[in-house]
Amino acid sequence: MTIDAFIILLYILILASYLGFELINKIPPTLHTPLMSGSNAISGITIVGAIIACNELGYVSVSKWLGMAALVLATINVVGGYAVTDRMLKMFKKK
Image 1 (tube, rainbow, N blue to C red):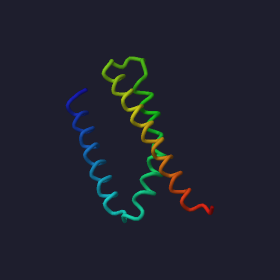
Image 2 (image 1 turned 60 degrees about the vertical axis):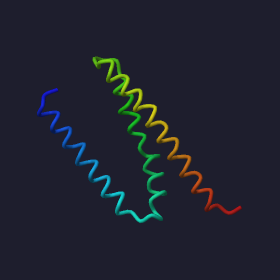
Image 3 (image 1 turned 30 degrees about the vertical axis):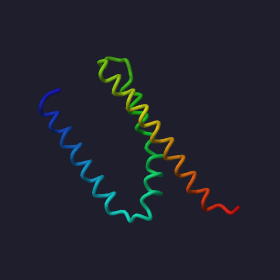
């Protein structure tokens, strides 16, 4: 990877982190948990990226291990998002 590509990727990471932080800060506390649980459940696209990173077609072993770690963490994130969303929806059902 060239230094130019690294700088561009670093710029994208910093910009995405800043925008995400600002977005979360603008959400009122009453909406924070429902929105975060829903977005965690939807973030299953991360699993697809992690599976691609675990791919054996030409990637180095470091990439495979990082992809496997990302796969495990993304799976925990998605399952947790579904669990929290399900628990919140049960609170609104009549008994």
